[in-house]
Length: 229
Image (tube, rainbow, N blue to C red; front, side):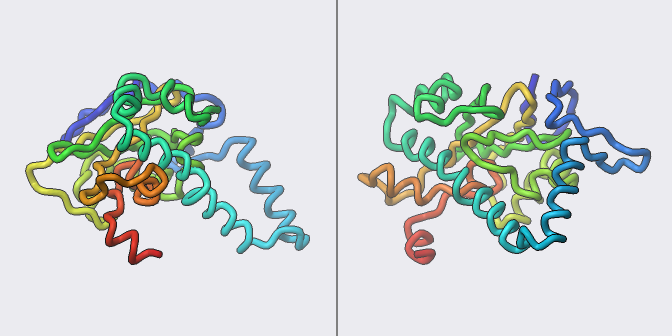
């Protein structure tokens, strides 16, 4: 069962990961790639070597799916929760059903839990043993989410990690770190920015970033959105 941790950490749980996330480790502690990952990387190398695939284009495609296509689904969920009280309550009570009602289903999203940021509590998500991630609402996990430094520091030093992402929270704000597993994945519902009263779901969705739904970032404010356009 997944666990939630406050600022301090006493971690203990058993991940029931499927084969896709079943990474073993060598004697030096490095990750040993699965057979599927090795085949994918070998195929990618061959296609690049023969000139069938442009590495830059491949990287751009992955980056687009990581930061735009996938997170667009989650932004829709968040925007609806911000603007529809009934949907908000449903999301907090049964995130899996609420998310599925919008058509976002599939592997890695079978068992979802939504955790809400408030002025008193900030939530952040990690998978300490590998990279369990809610693909249907967030797309591919970013490289840093899978990296050992994030997986360890997010639990031991969440404020330090947030600072690395440019987020500084008030000292009295509690930070809860949620550890995803193959059984349960989390979606952070960020705080709705001030000054957005009366905005449509489409407008609100533009304020939602991938990192704000992981908890390593905050939703954009209206001035930030204007500056980005």
